[in-house]
Length: 234
Image (cartoon, rainbow, N blue to C red; front, side):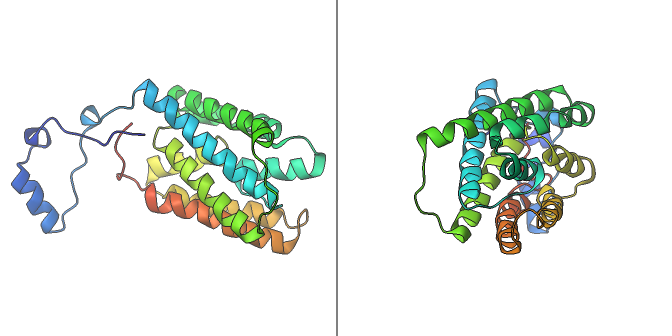
């Protein structure tokens, strides 16, 4: 799904293999290669990542919805409005995200914004289609929360590593990580927890707490696997 950063040879980093090894042994931080030496995802790789990531998230969202739970971010807002109005999650999610693309253009650029718009559109479409092809008769609430959160986290990780997002809070946390080095998963967990607490008047307190478990699973995936400097492909 992605390429790892590569260098044309030892001279590209300005050090020999032995010097690089010595730096690792003595605990010195590895030198980050310049942007020109980073590998770039091809259009085909980006396309499969958008498809794979949004398909995983749509399944995670379906599990959370079946369990009567919510999640954080704009998806959580869409869930709440879905429970209140009966309008489908996919339609609400797409509409809510539209204003956030202005922030994405200003802070992250057109390439990121266009891929994020495609991801939001795909997730909305998959969420509309999924009930026609996938149905669950029995789902334990805690299992639905954990597995739904993990699926959403892995799906978002795929999107993040291909410079895409699902709009909304994702845009903010990615900007903070890239600009200030603050881990995206930790920031998003705090924001998700705040949204879930605000949702307590609309859903039961136990449901909110179990939903928080799913949010923790989601953001654990991001906090551990999406650290600044760890993944250098663009």
